Image 1 (tube, rainbow, N blue to C red):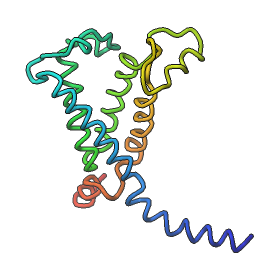
Image 2 (image 1 turned 90 degrees about the horizontal axis):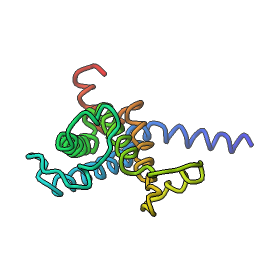
Image 3 (image 1 turned 60 degrees about the vertical axis):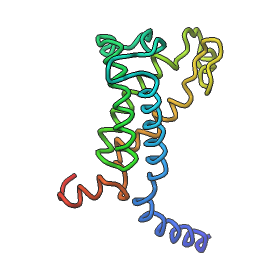
Image 4 (image 1 turned 90 degrees about the vertical axis):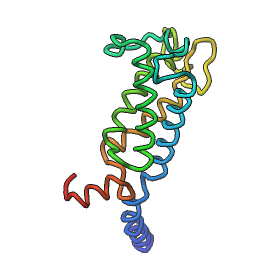
Length: 174
């Protein structure tokens, strides 16, 4: 038993320093790519610079305080937060800020687009935990997974293999 425990400790001692460098990297690259791609798809869906908002987006019922803004402003904001935030997250630049911003965008998207239209029980709500929508039952599985993957960047940062780490090292600050 002692030999097995020593082997385990030896493995962990070698993995922990590597984890500080690459532990969050695959998730960061994936989230950066996915949000950047989503933003570019929105940008290409209409002329986001001039307020031309697709009809499916204009009819959304956004939560407060986003309900106070026009659909064209919300479209512009979400498009550019996804594009810039995706690129910044991909490279690990100001990762905590962009991860938090993308969490807000994701929560609004879940509540306005992916949440079931109606549900009267937890079983009906759980039916919305799917990838594709079925008869208004929702499809919040992927956005919820994205939400969960963004939280480590808010609390732990982007890791040592990031522009954040290089900047903080050069500036001597966090």
